[in-house]
Image (tube, rainbow, N blue to C red; front, side, top):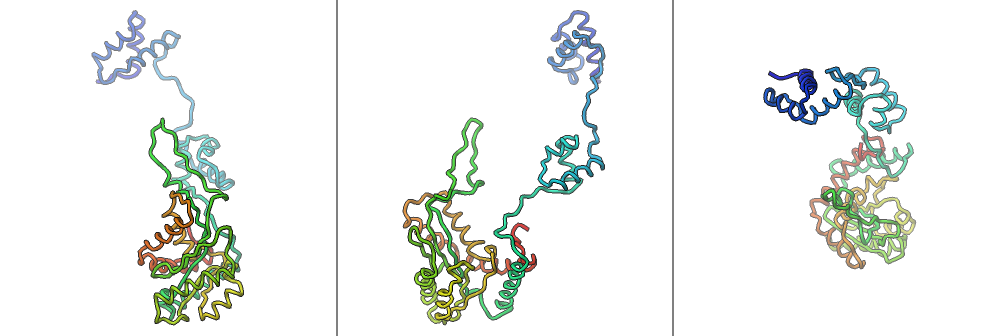
Length: 353
């Protein structure tokens, strides 16, 4: 048989009035009711309350929130607050609604079915004309390439420019380490605009890398450099890797950067008999270098410090050649899937949707 809380308090009050101490009272209770005897601290607290004039044995009434704080009216109020400001926090909601943090969590997640999501970063605020152009070019690609058309992805050479730093900071997740409460957090130098870096131009096809060009220090790409140094390397690789294949079968893809669209570049490609594939405006999500190759290379060298451009270039080349040929082929299949997703999204940026 268990002793009720009120019964324990009455016995404590009676024995205290007879001059017994807290330790003695608890010892007596422990002998008879070992399972329900309160702690010595609790018995002492009761005695202090009795000595201060407390005579009732029941707990004092405590003001607080009602047990059923998640009501229809509260849910409607929460919806109105969120509609007015979708960035509000659960802590703010709990204060505004007069409910606990847990109740606010239940209202938002269970009753309203909402989840807080970060805004998606997009490269550009597309106009309706640009969205339509993205869809048009993607449909053109899908119609002209296998299995629907005569062109093959294996004939495509795609490339772009990329700044690569001598030291690339790893992402925040990769920098997390286990530490005790007494240990200080490690420090990572953040990249800034003064970080040493060099401009690389990289072309690849479905078999692997074709060209890795490193711009001279303190210079940037121009149409003259592009046609004199970069594109000839692509053509030379094509000639060596497929000597029997006609140059006219090479399908070149690059974005709409100024050196790529310049008259000098267009004339060079026409003279060489190279077919230039169209690229949608403001579409890094449809450029294999941007959505696959450059993030992969930067992730591979992240956390490594380079002091000489020779070492950086050697490592970049090594990483490119270390990627299996199957991953290069898969990239072109992903490219096709991205075109399909772009069409489904009506030309909108689809990543994160």
